[in-house]
Image (cartoon, rainbow, N blue to C red; front, side, top):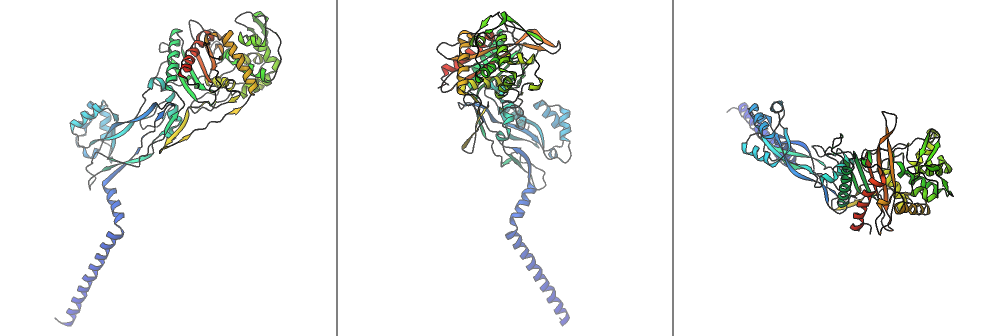
Length: 549
C-alpha cells in the first residue's frame, strides 16, 4: 500500500469513528434528556382525546333528602374509519336504538372523523343488544344522567338539564356554575396508524360539581302540593300556586305550582313556577300594606263611614261585598271593606302610601335565587290618576307575584325586617360547606309590625279569614278576591276571579308565612272560601311537624 492510499484509508476510518461517536452521542442525548418529549409525542400518536364534563353535584333538601343526583348511563359512539359496510351498520343501529337509518348513514359517512356520537345515554337493554352484535368500531362511554327521586313534587322548582348536564331552567340553571362538573377529556387508545380503537376510554381531570343544600323541605312541599291540587280539582280552577317561607330568614320551605290538566293550558313535565313568574292583581290581600302604612304614620281614626256599600270616587264607584255603615279602624280590615280602606288611604295621602308600597318590595324583584321572576307592575307616582289613589291601596291597578305578597307578610310576622326569599342554603365541596348569605333590612318598627300582626290575627279570629283558623294556634292573615281584567273587553271580567290568602303562623322563635293563590275557581271565587282552607291544611301539618321550634 502506497503512502497516498494509506492516508486515504485512515481518513475514511476516522470519519466512520467520528460518525459513530456523533450517532452514539445523539442516542444518549435523546434517551437521557428528551425522553419525556418523545413519550408525550408517542401518546399523541396513540391516543385520541375529546372533551367531556365531570359528574354534576347533587341537590339536597334541608332534611338531607336527595332531590337531584347524577347516575351512570352509557352512550354509544363509533369510529367511521373502521366501518366498511356503513349501510349495514346504519340499519343495525337504527333497529336497536330507534334512530332514523338515513341520519345514521350521514353520520357514518363523514370524512376525516374518527369519533361520532351514535346515541347518548341509552338504557341497559339497548346496551346489551348492541354488545351481542359485536360491531367492530362501535363502543360505549360511561356518562352521567340527571335523576330526580321526587320528580312530581319538585319539577317546577328544580328545573331541567340538557344532554350534557347543563342547567336549563329552575335551580339547575341558577346554580349551574356550581353544580356542573368540571371540564375534562376522555382518552381513547389507537394503534400506531390510528386504525384500531380500544373502546373503553379513560377519563382525565373530570372534577365533580359542588352539592347544593336547599331550604326546601320535602314533607312541606308534599303537603302544599297535595292540598293545592285537591282544591284546584274541587273548584275546577285553572291553576294555582303556594309558597311557604321562613319569615325570619327568607328561606323557602315549599314552592308549589299546579296546572289543572282538564283546562286548555297544557300540563308539561316542567312548568314555570307560578308563585314566582305569574303577575296578578292581588285584591284585598293587599290591604295589609295600607294597614302597615296607617299604623306606621300613626294616624288616628275614629269611626269610618263605609257608605252602606256604595261610594262614588273619581272615574268609578267602589262597592263592598256587604253594605256596611260606620266601622272602627280595626273593623274595616276585619270585614275587608273596600270603601273603608280607600278612605283610610286618602287620609294618609297617596305619596306616603306609594312610599310604603315601595318599601315593602313591590314593583321590583325580590332577589330570589330562581330565574324568571316578574317584578310585578307599579305605576310611578306621577302616573297615579285620581282613581288610582283609591283603588291601588285596595289591591287593584297593581301587579304582584305571590312571593312578593308572602315577603310583605313576613315583614309583619318577623317584627319589621324585609328578607330576601331564597332557595339556596349552602354549597358543599371537597369535604367542606359554605353557607349562602342573603341580605335583609329593617323597614318598619317592631311596634308597627306588632300592631299590624294583632289586627291580622283578628281578621282570622273574627273576620273574613275564619276558615284559616286553627284551634290553639295564633294565625294571622288576609283574604283577597280579585276580579281579573279582560284585555279583549277592556274591563274587569264579571265571572273570572283569582282567590288569594296570605297568612302566618305566629311564633316567637320561627314564624312561617304561607301564601296561596287560586286562578279562576268555579264553584266559589272568594279568597276566604277557596284559598284560606288550603292555608289551614298546610299550617296544621307544619304545626304538628314541630318545625316552628
